[in-house]
Image 1 (cartoon, rainbow, N blue to C red):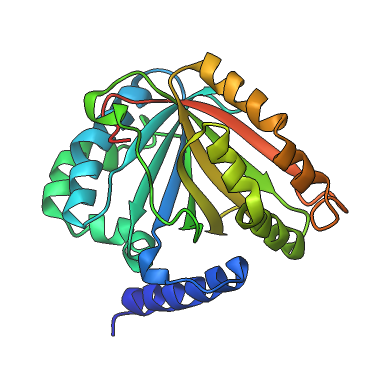
Image 2 (cartoon, rainbow, N blue to C red):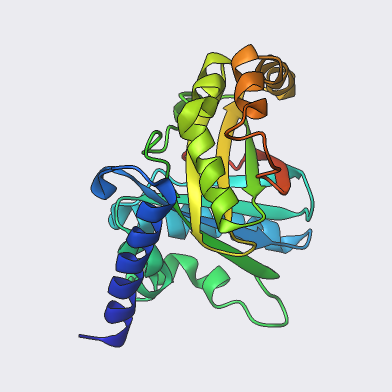
Length: 264
């Protein structure tokens, strides 16, 4: 067996085991999606158009040939580190996502379309650097849910939120909190979730990440006001099971807009 296939298989096995421990409840891994989440840190100017063309003309068609998608492509509008682009790639196979760049390098059609981005030199780089995470979908939200407006390129914005925990035990408790009622309050408050994911590989672990979509900022603010005042949420947040300690130590809150090529 080639070394890269062995590494991918090992990663798949170990990550599935981690995912099972993290959710601490019976689930069917095959029914749950996995997500590769990329952040491309940019400088303003030619890099932005070059990267956007790469997403739409090369990477998304190649991802579809691998059975991945729909792929979301977003611009950071509110949050630290702009300009930056985000890419969300869902798939049923963790091995395919783990090997994605290796598989892309073997796709002649992709390499032809990606040439300006893929072959960029140090004198004119396509991006500054990229951060890549691998996530497992929550068992109680097992698949990505794109907004209906994505099909018509309708008006929509996205909120990407990351909850860091101070320990693995606190992280597992926060995951349990979503199963124990937090996700239900999200839905009752009128939120439109895109995905909820437990980050298996990435920086600043342990943490979970989720994405919501809204028509505009007014809807975003209104929905959070409903959520924060919900009696069930207050009871859950302050109850003895989850309110005894600060189980989330840091929250990153970003607002994204979809690029023209985005399928989400």
